[in-house]
Image (tube, rainbow, N blue to C red; front, top):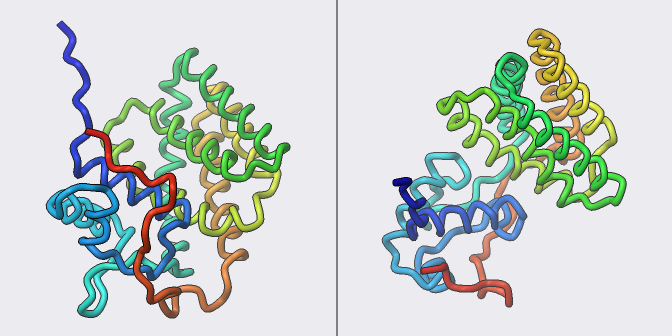
Length: 241
């Protein structure tokens, strides 16, 4: 008998909720994270809050500062360069492996994502475009059937999504993003590993250039805010039981 999927723990729910707030900009870089405020907001004890914040710190989304505890890690140009250097390596290898291992069902799914992303761009629906962008690259990693690669890429993509959400949503993204995706997909479809890897690496380089060009020169020199998170707006509800 197949086992039913386990419900996410309170720690996992809190972790995902805070990640979503960081990636969408609700928790801005430099904002301190107060355990008591988070516990009140999510209607949980401080234990899952502490565990979730530890995971966030290990993934680089929050950092220690002063005597006040933890804050959302400010974005710095050096961080973006390091992140996209890693992205080029992981995405390139994933594309190469996907070219050798993908299935017809996977190919149909990936094609739907590219079509949806292009439509989001045409509709100027930038938040949806970012989600489809991230989903495309995650789908390429899934095609490798390598769980360790998927785990490593998952941590990286949380940070990539945050960078894209912080910067690209301010002014959208260029059409070449989806042209690159289509070219990568074509190479994977043709089972051309060399071309797929080269295109994925070049795409990461283009992304880094776009992000850095969108950032002010002094980004990351100082926290952007000294405030704490305030009361949750109307869409904030206690975590599911």
